[in-house]
Image 1: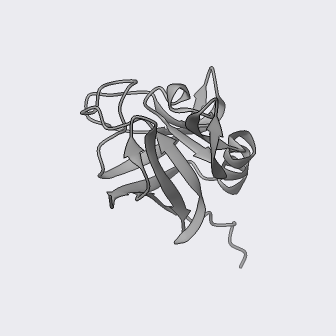
Image 2 (image 1 turned 60 degrees about the vertical axis):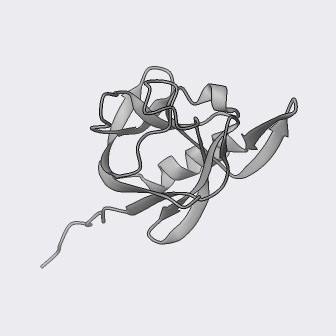
Length: 142
């Protein structure tokens, strides 16, 4: 008897344990208990749409086709918000309330930023081939 390939739903955790200031909220993204990359989100502005990090809790993320970012994942059921995506970028102004994935922290025009985001985001999407959704847990450890 032959069974079709089974795609396991990855366990994804965003751990905010780095800086949390006007330059943004920095953390790490773990996939199946292994650190995959760093993250950049806006500062906590009480969940204000397009300007704040999202509340630390559990979410379902679904595959989404964004007109701006192409194939990505959307964080579903963020209270009072929609269009919260994973994507690439360099500075907090590029987040628009979303989660930027990158390889390392950097400094751009004297602002804290992240680097190698495009390649990191593409690697994340390559790792998620065949995955339609995943469970995301956000922890804060400041």
